[in-house]
Length: 375
Image (tube, rainbow, N blue to C red; front, side, top):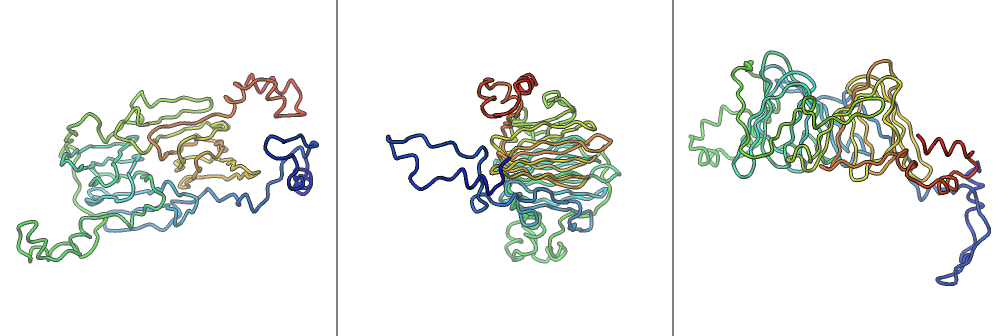
């Protein structure tokens, strides 16, 4: 293969070579490979970050760790949080001004309450493998139910979202003049002296028995809850593993995101592909993975992942995921589009004419091209 210098020498002609407009003409053959000028192609960014290695935000009832564009610069479209609630604790009533929230429950049980602008509300109970989705700006809360902790992965459709930018109810009451609070709630001003002095964020509290935490269904067709590991509509098998995915087609309320869980068996891989319409975000739950990322312009990067790490694949970047460990590789994955669209490289090759492939892969033996088309 030609070096970069050789390619530069042979794939650049003189200014004006080849003619102009309708007077274009052939030029002598140039280099067999193209030269990529570093000024035109930026360096391949790091696409791995240790979310669980980040500093936690800790309050009386639990903690949260985050990965945003501020810590993880490539992650412009999606931010992520790992949140842990002790028994009885609640993530207080709050909303997000710039992002929708998607969640996957890893362990334990919890209950969410959500309110939309119409005044309609929904109360749902969750167990491991369940998802929730709250549209941007909708008020919501999360509370552990039962006597064991609950923790979950949150994904947001804006890389600039931060838990420190959440609009929390205790924070709001603390900074609002007491005479206004008294008028709003019909209480004497002194009643607000007992309220928290600042943002409670995750508040400790007595254990809520599961039998006392009752669902109150949403009075509309599409619920905020999806049972990812139990709903047959989520099943998308592939060679080498299993995939459970919820899109807007299976879960209509989830208009701005898709998400699910992929399991890859030892030594197997999710083969080369790219996402047409969305950025892709990973949180590694179990095992050891390797991701090979292709970024155009001669750029490629390979990184290894372990539990607690996150990956970010920009829209359109080619990639593959391989299990390099001796146990199943489990990955929570989200995309910042309700519609899920991807193209596999081998499918594209199989659908292309043989003469095109022989031209593209000049010098490759014919039997190799045949095997590429056969798969």
